[in-house]
Image (cartoon, rainbow, N blue to C red; front, side, top):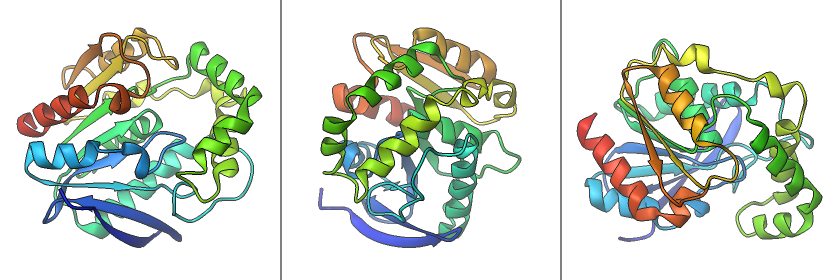
Length: 253
């Protein structure tokens, strides 16, 4: 498949870079993780577009990749909800017709928040290694990452114009004691579209209980998939499994 079509949108006062694989209107929208970007999806968007026979769009959230930089310092504790508002505005602006959201980690959380709103305008969600509350294992891992931040930031520089700011914004809010009370499970029962909650059994940032609890909070519209031997970066470690999860969700929505 050819290289994606790149575009820059103005959404809620921010410049947001998008990339679209395939032709026509995107029916699948990808949301990256807390340190992610368009480029870190690697070959997965093209694989999904080919397998599902539809256009696939990914985008850099503000502060990430080539999108508008954000002020220095940690994200505010309501940042995931703020990003869900931006997602809603972008979907409205693009006039996408009931897309399937595929979100990884924090992107999965944003997708779930959006789907729980009164008028989500989506046909389903695939939440990969998403969080619905704060687990100690996640905070412990991110705390350890902050100790070895320098090589991590160097690696992020391949994907972000402002890698140090991306790392501090994300890691800073996750270790904030106030954010430890963040919990969206009570809101998830409002989701009335199909949701696949998937997590690797070797996830460094979450236990199997996270996926099980998240699916239980959503209720009968959710299915839980535990992928054996896979860590947090499911789309890197098991891209074929991720594509299959998305294909099934797209067909069955």
